[in-house]
Amino acid sequence: MNSALLPVPKIEDDFYDWHARHAEKCVRVAERKDWQLVCLGDSITHMFELAEQGGPRGKRIWDARLAPRRALNLGFGWDRIQNVLWRLDHGEWEGLSPKLAMVLIGTNNLTGTDRARANTPGEIAEGILAIGEKIRGLSPSTEVLVLGIFPRDTPGSALRKSILETNALLAARVPERSGFHYLDLADAFLEADGTIPPRLLNDGTHPTEAGYRAWAEHLEPYWGRFGIAGEGVG
Image (tube, rainbow, N blue to C red; front, side, top):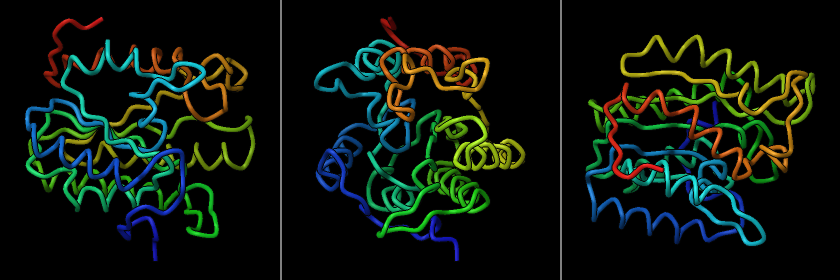
């Protein structure tokens, strides 16, 4: 059985209180329904709205580029696909009908721990599509923008190959579904030789402030396409 399809709450320990963040996000969803953009994912999305001690992550970019577009960040550090499915079932999408849901998830499913096994590229692609289908079921007017898993590790490594295989499956399957769209931003985070520049992903996985800026800039053409307006966007 594909473990990525079995909704579960928190699995791994990380730098924050998972259950407290879930409760806080449910309150925000209950208090406000006019979100235009909802971003779902793991720590890569989570840190888009954080200013990290000792150096910025994405908060300044988020505040300038996404917050004015009424964006809600539902990224949770260390989350896997199965955690996102659980969160969608437990209050984080209650009554929402945004114009766009941006989904970036799956990198944590590529590796296993003693708490959860690794998933295959086929299982991960299936799980990501299941997230999109759940969103469309809850909010049929919402368009789903699936992002390819961001690059990790070195060119030719087993992990990099698994990411490429997963993204190839997504590129083929996402456009087959009504209301689904696919975007691969890998080239924005790679040098010409396929290596990852520390100025953009300084730990090989999570964007720096410059990386979040590059991400936001590559999304600019999509706001008009999906009718997402922003006031005072920097």
